[in-house]
Length: 202
Image 1 (cartoon, helix red, strand yellow):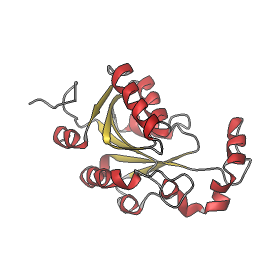
Image 2 (cartoon, rainbow, N blue to C red):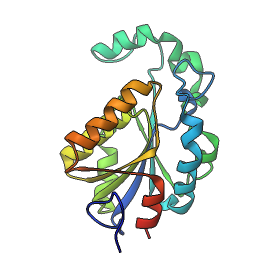
Image 3 (cartoon, rainbow, N blue to C red):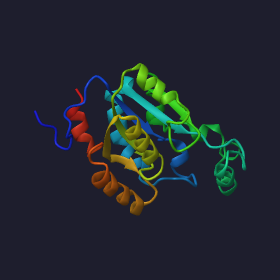
Image 4 (cartoon, rainbow, N blue to C red):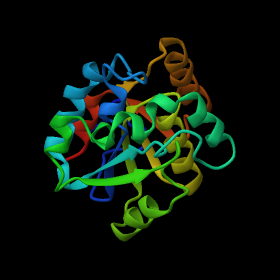
């Protein structure tokens, strides 16, 4: 049986769904709102409902107060003082409600930068589960998803990027990154729609 778009065949027992930053922080009326987030949410919910035990959510946690953070992150949280935990409240860091209700069995891993890799917990969990393939959804295509994908490539994971389950606040850079994934990372990133993932992941 062939799986259109999946160059390297079906998704097996050593596959995990890594869902990036589908949080209240990035939904209306937040200053960081990603307009498409509600468009891709139903597709992500559908996958999590089928694969909750194989799903890991990352959550981006802003600084507690303005000016915190190392290096340029200090400047970042001066610019985005309105988005610190002190200002928005800790509940804004929570997953969107249809997803939070699926935890557990889905797992949540917090991070404080764009990439989920430097803090180490994600890779430890994946190694314990003997994961070699990551199905990636979430946002933003051109920021945290990008950091997630590049780190996964460096570690050596097979990366399956679900094109209709990604969102960004910028159409232009979303489209540009999809071109990069197709043209520059085709050996290491397979780009497919959700339907192909559901068919290929028994």
